[in-house]
Every structure is written in structure tokens, then in C-alpha cells.
Length: 361
Image 1 (cartoon, rainbow, N blue to C red):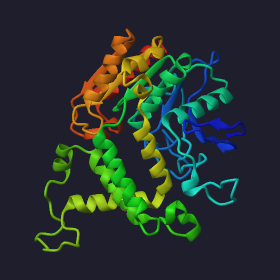
Image 2 (image 1 turned 180 degrees about the vertical axis):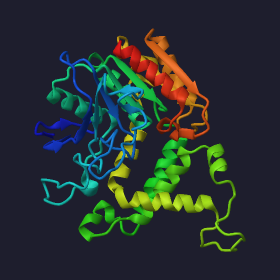
Image 3 (image 1 turned 180 degrees about the horizontal axis):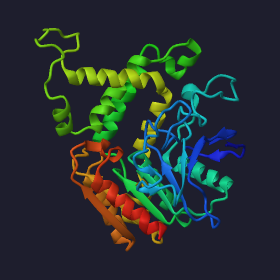
């Protein structure tokens, strides 16, 4: 869907003549009261469930669909691709009207709040005044939280999974190392590599490898790979792949560099860095959540998620309780690390199923 009215951004810039790509699942009821917005994480998209024309399965297909925890027989589910992404919505690969060239590194920096404001405009165009719920995991969970702060009257419930009120210093550090891997790739060309017909694959691969390590727990990596070698004997090489974990990470990096845009990676990780609702309130998270007094919240975290640790979700819970805001919190003992929010876990899915059954009722 195209929008001609300029979108003011937190940076002070604005974006005009932009498009948002979205998918919907289920049917909107006559009262237009059963819509659920699903917000995506770093490398996901609007394709939430089912098979797309390329036979690619939606990234949250185990959660969204007929009879699943977010049941599309009862809810009208909307998945939106965020601005700055590389999966259809206006981003660095699109043409900058001012230059006639791809935006590249000139694409304006966008924030979680900017995405939420753009999503609100899409809902306006769809004739949806109020969401039954907004749901997201990781960076998507930050967007779900931001909905209750930017547009609290337009959402009944926030369901935020494996998320945080801001990134820890260590998380910002991981993002910076990943960005430097991309920026220092000789094929990056200051973000305008499209003009040179190249892709900074090496930088993207390293960035993905760094990120992927943080999404897994030590226990899950040990259980899956251990110290297993690719060959029966040590090769005594500093250049070759020796361990299965090395092979796995290189495969993940190579696959990622085939479909993801380098400038998009820089933009989205910076949006992660910037998210900090308490910043505008002198660091007081409870004050930041004061506008959400009429909303309800469900939060889920996972014990081995060291990137978005349960302690960070408990910070949000405390801020909500301090405001006497209705909140349910589940802490799932799962071995999978941050990626647990994407996996099948009957306890986790049971929490979300119960949540959406209550919302539907």
C-alpha cells in the first residue's frame, strides 16, 4: 500500500511517497474488533504464516493459523514489513526520488516508534480503529510495547515475547561489531554498493554469524554440535573449517548474505540500539508506561535467553505493576536461548493460546 502524506521521523527527517507491504490472515469481523497486528523481528518480514508464492513458510507459522495459538478462525491477523527493510516496503534498495538512484546509505534512520506510526497509518487505511492485540517477539516485542506508548487508545492488549525495555550495553556492542564487519567490507562502498554491482557478502556473513551466536544458548549449541569435528582427525589448519559449529555458522552466514540487504541490517540494528522509552522520562520506566494504564499486557521470557534475559522482562513487569496496569508474566524454562520464541514449546504456546482465547472471549 502506498502513502503520499510525509511520515515525520524521530530524527527530524520525513519520508514521503513510501509503500508498506503487508499480508492478512483470517477475516475481519463486522465490528472490526478482532484484528491482531504481528510485528516482525530483525530479519523477518510481513510473511507471518502459510506458504507464499515461492513456497516459503511464514516465520511464525507454528503460532499463527487455523487452530493454532493465534487462531485465524477467530482473529484477523496482519503482518507488516517495516520501512527500511528489504522485503518489499520502501527501503535502501528502492529509488531515492531526489537522486534517481537507490537510497543506499542515504535512507533516513528509522526507529521503533517510526515503524509503529507507519503501522498506525496502515490500520487507518484498512479502516481498523482499535486492535484486539499487538504481538511481537524480540524487536517485534519492542514494537508491541511502543504501541501502548504511542497509540494506547488503539490497542487493547500487548503481547510481548522475549523482549526488553532497551538493549543492554553488551547487546549494543554486539550490534556495533556486526555493523563494522559490514562497513569495512571493501564491497560496501559507503553503502552505495548497488551502483557498483556488488554485495558486501563477507561483511554480511560475519554479521550474521555474530548475531546467530547470540540467539542460541550455550546448552543448545553444546547439545547440537558439541566439539564434533567435520573429519575424524584434526587438520592442524588455521584457515580450514574443522568443527561442525564452524561449518554451521558459515552456512548461516552464506545463506543470509544471499537474501538480506546490508544497509537494512545497519538500519534495523540501529533501531534496536535506539529503543529506550524511559530515556524521555529521565530513565524512569514506570513513568514511560503511564500512558498505557488502560491497556493489558502479557509478557513471556525464556530462562536461557541471555540476549533478552528474563530480568529485562521483569523490569517491564515492575513498571507496569507500579502503574497498577494489568499484566500476566510467564517465564519458560527452555534450553534454546533467544530463538525459543520462534520454536515449538507446549508451555509457551499454551500461554499464548490461553491469552488469545481470553481476548477472543
